[in-house]
Amino acid sequence: MGPIIFSTKFFELHTLWVFFAIAIITTTIVLIKLSIKNSLKIQFISENAWKIILWGIIGARIVAIITNYNIYFYELSSQSLLHLLYIWDKGLDLWGAIIAITIYFYFLCKKSDQNFWKWIDVLVPAAILGLAIENIGLFFDGANYGTPSQLPWAVNFENPAVKYAVPIHPTQIYAFIYSLIIFVFLWLFSQTKKIKDMEQSGLIGLIGIGGYSFLHFLEEFIRGDDTFMIFSVRIGQIGSLIAISGAIIMIYRRYLRKNTSHLHSKQI
Image (cartoon, rainbow, N blue to C red):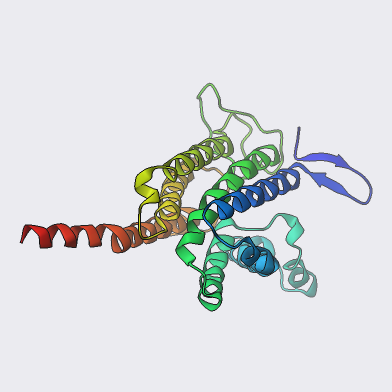
């Protein structure tokens, strides 16, 4: 299976879009099951689904344009400006979508009197599973590829978009594996009595965000595709560090600080 499953004069079916569709369907099914299990109103998601998706696409597109400005602004013309709207060119950034959806979802929950943190516990595991499946599509597409490697599982890509003609790290498969492991861990951890008895929700989601971001940060060290750099640091690593820091701060504020204060008062 290559980047394109089949092609006609008028239409090309990309492998990436097939796995993206499978990821969306799987994420939706898991989200529904987890929502029901956690006594959340799935109607809240279904009624606002198109808005959430729209904001995700807008955020993903804006960040993709910023981080690949040399591709989209190679010239200033009406054609190049129109090209900014062509979202089907696979120019969508994961972190842009996550940031946009998280911000919009937070204000949507406040407006609709929904528990944002309970929804985070449901959305994060479902989204991570979707990311795992999407990475299979990225592998066949040759996107998000790695740097040259002599490891026995290094792969060759016969794809003009990949700049290396030697075996490279299959970073997409690494991402698939660690995303799947995180999902299984979150699923099993959420079933423990300690988590079920917790007064405050959100721990599952925050652990998922922190764990995924940490492993993605490490993955970026062996990524070989070109991206936007800030002080020689890949933009994906910067986004990962922000997400890790945010998750750690929120875990401390919501759970650890309360327990530390309680222990301290008991000792006094």
